[in-house]
Length: 592
Image 1 (cartoon, rainbow, N blue to C red):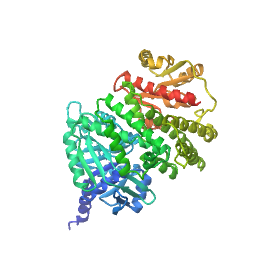
Image 2 (cartoon, rainbow, N blue to C red):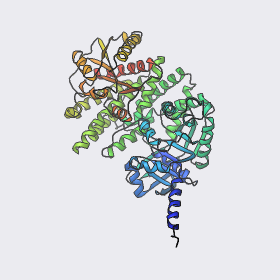
Image 3 (tube, helix red, strand yellow):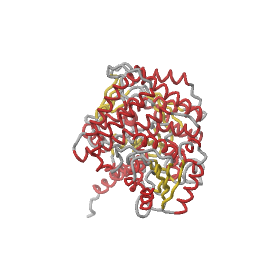
């Protein structure tokens, strides 16, 4: 008698079917905005995957996500809770294989919603669903001036066929500028508060070649976000650049909100902080004009005031929220987008001779504070102490008092306030970090240093020809920069290994800048950093650094630079990085 095999066949049919049920949308870096987009796509019947930190994925898996939409006056317009299901699934690094097996449908949408410092890590995770053979689309919704430019180059190298002029994965990457009030207000009981949003689609470069992708993404988002967000496409490349620059300028409140623990309304109403913001906006306009981006100063001032007053007056800006989240979450480091906001304005303005002192100061100060805070947070994780929170609380209280936010009167200029906040940070670092020398080596030595008339720059590369050529080109280019030669006699040295670099440093104990290859035979370039004093600034370059190398570099104190070879704009990339690091070196030497 023939054996009955139907259950076996049915099992295989179901197994095969489950493999084919790919997602319509996958959000990587699923924070507040990414979750909101996912929710409304889900309500249209689409299958959603969300990739996030494991702690968030676990919390959502247990309790679901509560979405609370508020009106302009603070009233609740809508409240809903979504729980994890087959069509609304959360993934993290330990369930990435499940996401890979499920995949993304043709014409599906990938949303990159992480913070800019995490983009490379998120892109690696997104490899689980990006298929160059399928007509998939990618939307970036990061803050910053032009974050999609670097990502586009990575996608082009990884996926695109150089024999085809268009229709590659990089041509389906679209940027999105989002004006919205959104925040995760509770991580233990996952809750997202949000209001009406405006999303402008476009691209900093290659605008025309991406128009079809913009139309597809616009149609998908517009249908699902009716009544919740206004979605549109910029008229042309320059219009998109204008929108992105204006948004980045308005984000100038981020570092101020974080460093003074101030709500946006407090910044508006406080004379010195209000004036600080005016200075930053004026600097942003100057940078935009140097790039031929037509921004009207009066219009920007007026629209910024209106957005702050009507939309976010009672809220902390996102960097302040980042700090608050890090403070209440054990083991979580402080990560902000300062490098793509304040410091990006400095980097873009500097080659054009545009002075951006407020952006440079607040960017450097936020970076310096973050470095100290995360150093203490690492100690807390090992010792069960609470040093980072104590340090931050004392610093923020002092800053609020200096600005007159604590009922104190303050008749101080923005420049004087900046100086006093800087002095306060250095004093508090000397107190709170003095017991951490065993944890951070010599990076917080308290003895004052004497400024030298000679600035030593050390180039380290195990390939001697590369080291010598790079050193000669750096020396030649810096000799033509009068803003540097007027202050320093520049001497460029070379070393052909990490060990030799340390020996050179011992002989020239005032090395200001180290330019080092990442991958060398005996030791990684960044592993020698602890053997140098804190004032030394590091720039790393490589054509073959791994993601692990890059993450280790980014997490090092001082937020060192990392450049990929070949440099995008030749030696000028390296010269720009050195110029920026000289400014940081001057700050450190005056500090110590």
